[in-house]
Image (cartoon, rainbow, N blue to C red):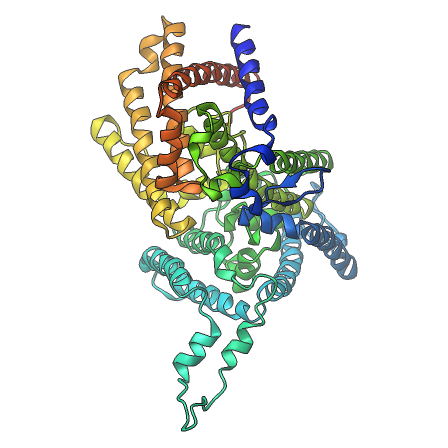
Length: 565
């Protein structure tokens, strides 16, 4: 009861500190006022200064139209081809003259035919002439899988796609003007005028709705690797099938949909194109493996129901309204961009600016991911949920990354972490190897996000901050404290406080402030005796919050919920 009271008081103070500010009268207001714009809530400005979220927010009405139009077009296509007459998989021996297996094949053919055409139109609308660049990358990656000897496929796939990541960044999407100038260099005539026209500039002016296609292409690279590696592993499993494993192909679990390989004939270029450019998940994910995509095109997932999809849509709307209220009443993103004089803020206010900035990061990622997942659910495909816990409900650095961008985490485990050794090794050497694997994984994750030093620092900080948790689990194994559960819970609570502080530091460095901005923030918080006193009180509050998180997870275990994060 005491923990609940303290937790309620602290949570109320968090929001009060942010909502009770009068920004117009604040000494720093002129420094960030130009970053604010008129909002739809009367009398309030809106902090729409985050470019990533601003792009999603601005285009949301048009995205809603596409989300409504896409399923309607699929139904119209199915109606024209009368597909429902022969693709409804049932338990009866025959389905309109077809066996259930043949009906599933027909459903796959029908759905991918639509996905292929819609993806082609969608990619042209988004990128116009730049779609040719994407098509070339897709063709080269497919050729690696299909034309190279089997033993060279993994290395060639990884080298090619990492080179693509760096080349996209270095050459900024390969402008046609630069290519034209390289192939047909222009030389000035006697009067100083150029002798030929650079038609590449005209082509670049037709870049579609998203002219900088390379910015969002990183997510596509993951699907390119997924297809090639799923194909490579399928070569080792030829002859195996779900039937031989005594699995019902129409009722596979999510794990089996990922691990059971598609049929050899299903690794065609048409299926590959439809998967890589699958419209609901093309821009931001969640990430779906090729095996999973094909499985759900053959058999509709039993997890998709009208009630579940409706509730998911309601949850999205609630999260969207939460974000709108936050950016209308809390201007922490604009404040951090302006880098004002930190000394005018109290240590408590500075810590809350950092805390709610992290909440803004969480929401700005959650909203696009849930929106596009909702689109996929409406289309009859169930991709993984990327955010399964609130950002504020995490105390373990290792478990945090299992629930943050969860589909990416699963992708990393399948295609990087397990192939390089995973966490199967025991003993001290095994722990050291695990840390090395973590370092390799987070280096890739940082470079995949963006080729910037601050993100590389973020990846290394994450690995460094996982070390204390690993060492603590070795020094304080749970089995030795079974007779003293309350003492062990206190020890875990102390460790959780350290983990939370380190995770906040790492994410503020990587996604908000950078190293220099973080130094200013920390100096403002602990640069005085009152700040140090506040830090002690904040750690006590985090300790109470960790105890609440422990209780939440224990209740989940009692209810049979196993999130593993």
